[in-house]
Image (cartoon, rainbow, N blue to C red; front, side, top):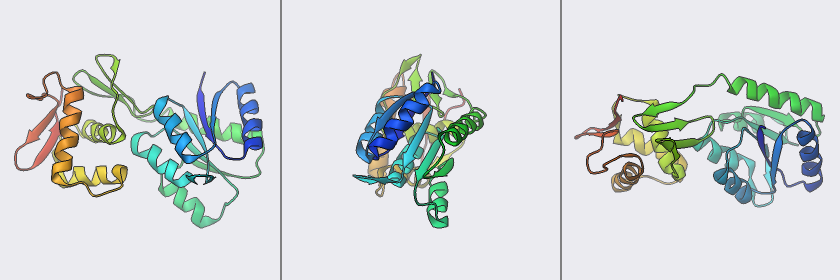
Amino acid sequence: MLKILLVEDDIQLARNLKDFLQNEGYSVTHKEGQTSGLEAFSQASYDCVLLDLSLKDGSGFAVCSAIRAVSDIPVIILTASADEACTVAGFELGADDFIGKPFRPRELAARIKNALRHHSKAPTLLRCGSVTLDPARGLASKNGADLYLSPIEYRLLLVFLSNKGRLLTRDRLAEELWSVSGEFVSDNTLNVYIKRLREKIEDDPSRPAMILTVRGMGYKAAEI
């Protein structure tokens, strides 16, 4: 059964949507705000996110940005504000689709199916040695066992595995992590993140075989 995370602070609308989508065969988890929505996303895997823009404790834009930092699952924005600037901002943050309120449930169901169908054509698993990363679901594992990575560690691993064999400078890595952490990433901080990631994925972190140091230049993921 496909799982949907619904982040919507209109309780009656959320209740009606949940009932409708469950009758369509989906499993639906509803959260009312930015904090609870991101917490739910970090604790379970979902196939699609339905996201209101105006939340009691934050913004749907912030939720979309945080999800995009660690996953590329379909995100459909539900909004009463369908002006051009709002739509452009959402797409720039990585939203897959917009649907304006009020909307017909059947139209939303069609949009969900379309987003899932398009997403199924996305790149499959990324691998390096015994480590596997599933970008579609935001999951990482080592020898089949789940790896519990922080958002920054996950992002770092995604960048490395998406660029296997390619030199990644320290500046490039710092820029990639800046969008996740929300603050400047110094050389010392980058060292700490890479050390923590190696401790979780390498068999012997003191002699890394997957994340290799290119002395004086940066790092690269081994082609294994």
